[in-house]
Image 1 (tube, rainbow, N blue to C red):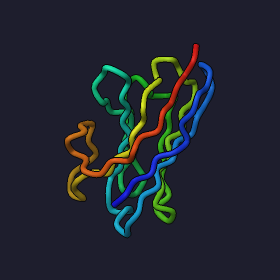
Image 2: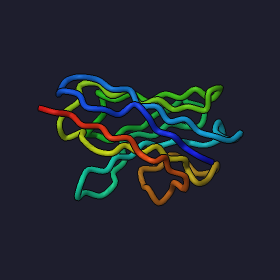
Image 3: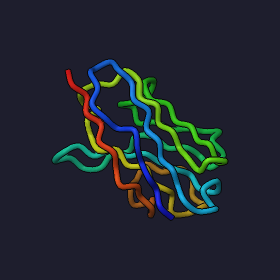
Image 4: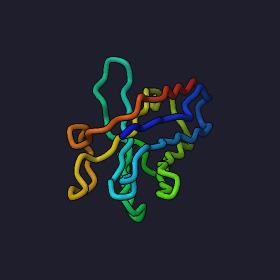
Length: 125
């Protein structure tokens, strides 16, 4: 399984970005997916997660109300729409696949076993 994240860039505070995560393989639709981010000198933190069927999403309190998450299982792709960006959203963003089909969504990096390469998001004030 390979995950390819894209869509990062440099924006001003208040603007929007849309990240995509394209997955290889035939089992994409069977797994919950997550997004995490890591700022310099900080630990990787949970951003959002979506169930395998796209019906339920979960967000960190820091992004709730500003970010939305969706997926297209026909295209093996997950989309993270980020609105109202703030300088504190600056980080490398990673998509990840849950390690088990049986587990629920998780906020913990240890519960994901496939990771994309990351895409840089920089928000200037």
